[in-house]
Amino acid sequence: MLIFKTQVAFLGHLVLEHGIDPMPDKLQAIKDWPTPQCLRYVRAFYGLASYYRRFVKEFAIKSKALTRLMRKNATFCWTPEAQQAFDSLKDALCNAVTLAFPSPGQTVILDTYAFDVACSGILSTYVDGAERPIAFMSRVFNSAQRNY
Figure 1 (cartoon, one colour):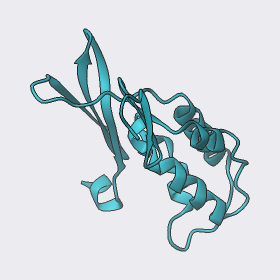
Figure 2 (cartoon, rainbow, N blue to C red):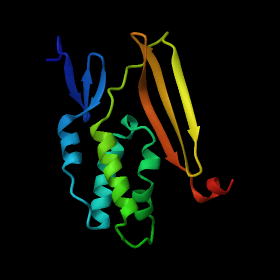
Figure 3 (cartoon, rainbow, N blue to C red):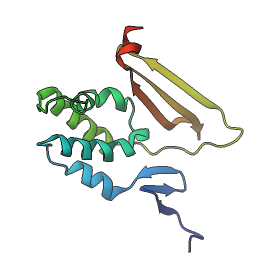
């Protein structure tokens, strides 16, 4: 029964009365994830982390080195850059902010950014006089988009 609950677990998210958080047990799994030793483990980590990408500002930029490892016909070579991306993603996910709920009639703010290799955006709103994110978005450009 869901009546009078202050939090509900739903599809890997913890829905609270004031916003949405990632599930604590999933965050613990991310925090405890060992350094990948092969491409299969990189894909497994990236898949779990990517499920929570809306909680991480500039997810695509932080994970660029990992996505480079997963390209077709790429050989697996764990570099310091990949380790830094792995650690950065783990840290960002473990320190994820609670996302606010969008509401009709509320002022919504869209901030967008463009970098050499990616673009990102933040959808946010004001809650109790403070700006709070509703969701983060980011995407790495493909080679044609980077040339443009």
